Length: 372
Image (cartoon, rainbow, N blue to C red; front, side, top):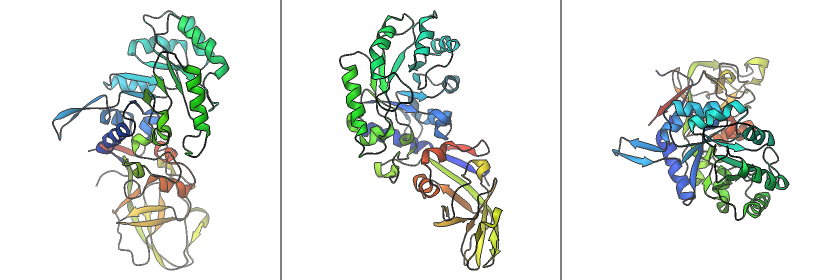
């Protein structure tokens, strides 16, 4: 029996999702976003699967992969370089220290510039060669980025800085693209296009939600994150509605089956009490593995071809499910917490969170295994 719990990652699903995103945005290059350990799927697993050039043994030839990778931190980019990944890498939060800049040059890593302190660091250092910069414009997210009023002066300073490669690339980030009826996204697009009209450099606006729901935001580059992993960014929607395939199946096993009497409780705080005689299954996964402690009664798991509800509180290492009075499930049977049979988007809705959080919060106790 394989170790459990484990996250089984499908290489084929990742490659299929990349191909589908190319069909959705045929005129754009793809910056595959692999921050947060590849959204919990394993940074190098994803890079290997959707890398800039992949050899597919089943067909005996190479196929084109992503055009680049987007990351949050320099350490993630260096992991990819150490793993043999070539091609464009972009730090989406930019660099944090002036001492990072020579490292960017050595390893040919692009950087976002979103704050004047970063510009000051560029203006006061001498590098062996210029750094490729993407200036981030705040069109409405109001998190990081230069305001519309700041843009002209910042852009001119970047143009005059010898440490910055030319042309300078241009980007923004959507606040409400995961709400397809929200007009703010169009407002942001209009502001961006008006501001940068006539300027050189590549443009990128669309994250996953922009790519799927706002086709006019598909500029020179798209930056799909969650969609690459087969998950929809929109609450109430599923990746399968866009011909995307879930790339992760989180699985564990039953470690005990118990006869349970009506009126008996289970778990910490005697949180749940059986209304009738039943059988309970104990599953080897808990909040110590990243499965949310606040998963309410009725949150489904998938066992032997059917949905089974969680009962009682999720513990650090275990959770309990109501198998039913006539259940034939046994110790060792596989349990899918989410995956192809049970969409992570649905599980997230039951728990009151988003699928992003579920897939990225798995702890190191969960074995992440890349499969074909």
